[in-house]
Image (tube, rainbow, N blue to C red; front, side, top):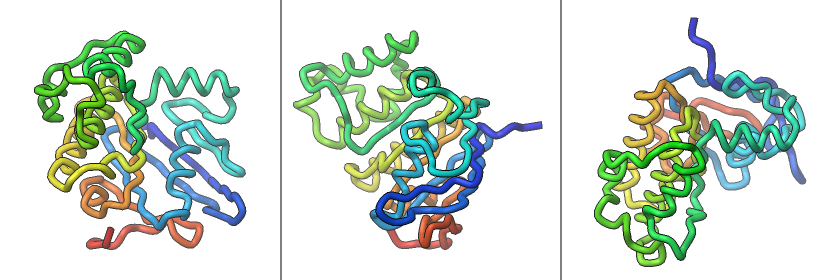
Length: 221
């Protein structure tokens, strides 16, 4: 029997207004899921709840066998650092270091090594030893992705991971992410405005009117 890597039930959240209510999600090993929706619809809030940053107002999150919000904050921080990979649209790279040094820092903390094949797949192998400040925004984003994958997490959350990339490079990054997930029997949860990126995932939902609805076959970004 295959057990879910992520199982969320009855999730709800609100700030000044309700964002979503009674949301259910399941991700099995090897699966990828995209969430789309208008700005302010709650996409990133949902990602932050599923990844342990933001407790839900209602519902439960079981992630990699852990009842996430039965852990205390310190335990969640440790779990997130050790078990998850999180790709943000903002790069959060150390500007005074080279791309390689940024990736090495993450690999060192995780007890792993940089895979040269990963750098080649992301087409950053020729710029990896340049200072981050010398790189384009797209190159910095790919360094950020390589840094996350070098930790070798089983579950990856990505919030607009291709927002700074042209279409061809965005497709490349998604191929690298999905290949990584399938090779390791992991899972990917991605928030995106890009319909092309969403279609590369196994499942796509649109968050609107406080609920998740299946994406149309040919949705607009």
